[in-house]
Structure formats: C-alpha cells, structure tokens
Length: 90
Image 1 (tube, helix red, strand yellow):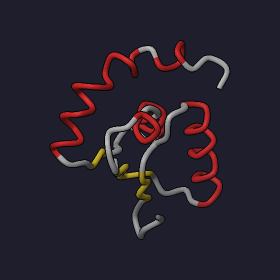
Image 2 (tube, helix red, strand yellow):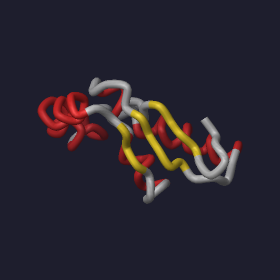
Image 3 (cartoon, helix red, strand yellow):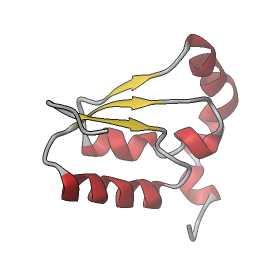
C-alpha cells in the first residue's frame, strides 16, 4: 500500500530473489520508502526475505504480534541463517 509518506508491505515472502523483484516493482511505482513490513504470522513463506527489505530500506520497521515474534525466534532463526544455501536455485 502506498501512503502519503511511504509504503506498507505485508509479508516479505520466502525467497530473497523474489523479494528483490518485489522491491524493484515497488520502486517502479513510487520513490517513497517502504516504512513498514507487517508479518501476518511466523511461517517461512511470510518472513524469510525480511533481510532484503531491510537492506533496501534501512529505516524499515517490522510490525507483528508478540506471539509471532516469539515463534519466529523459536522456530525460524536457525533456518533463516542458512536460507540462501537451503534454497539454492530459487
């Protein structure tokens, strides 16, 4: 969603390569920064490419519930550390 002073994105997706394409599409549509990325829940297909958005938009804020944040830390940190290796070819 493009607002008056920035962009809100819902979920970053699973694959960094696809997130980079999403970022390129956003930049085609607006020069406003992505200010917020909302996590709907903690599954990998919704959070794994957060780093691409953080690189592209250093001031981005991630928005989620405490439960989702806790599950991300408990379940996904180790997997995400090696996501590019684990998903080679995507």
